[in-house]
Image (cartoon, rainbow, N blue to C red; front, side, top):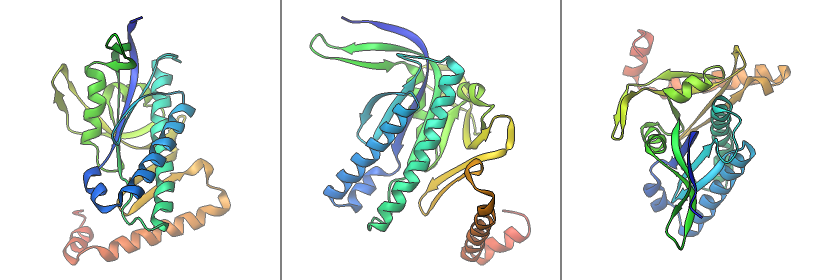
Length: 255
């Protein structure tokens, strides 16, 4: 039986940056093992947050919130954002282990999130039906993913309006997209905040050579000096690696 509905959803789309180049660096067996582990771990996190795992498209992943069950547009969007941050955190742990096992440049993942109305239900032929979503708002989640930097989560303004109480984010240049008449204002996620206390932050940054996930609510007071020392040493190492010209601009306040 074919049954579809139009519902307000929050849609998540992710893919692995430069996946084709990654496949060329790894042996097929190692790539298959890593990709399957990655997709399994991400699916488990999606399910734990109440998301519906729609499909895998190669290395890409589509998840949505709001059907078949919903807690309301705002809570669905917050659950999706928390899921994305947890995915980046878990990916950082996986990458650390993969590096110890000899993979020099593990996966770097980009993520996009959008909230809007989509058609959801069973689509396909008389012989085969898939439970999935279609619509321009779903395509926009994929577009936001495509403009994200490696390790970054980019959300639409529509999602930002629903989650602004729990997120620190900054706007990116507006974009346009076929099938959507309005101008789209993306926001790059800087981290989560805890309630209305914007001093309590969850910072998550994952790119080539960097895996950072700092959740101040989980750092024990006795460990804060150690965290501060580690971050200061990281900044010092970065400063040493800067070319002389860049250091000069930095000293002058230009970078």
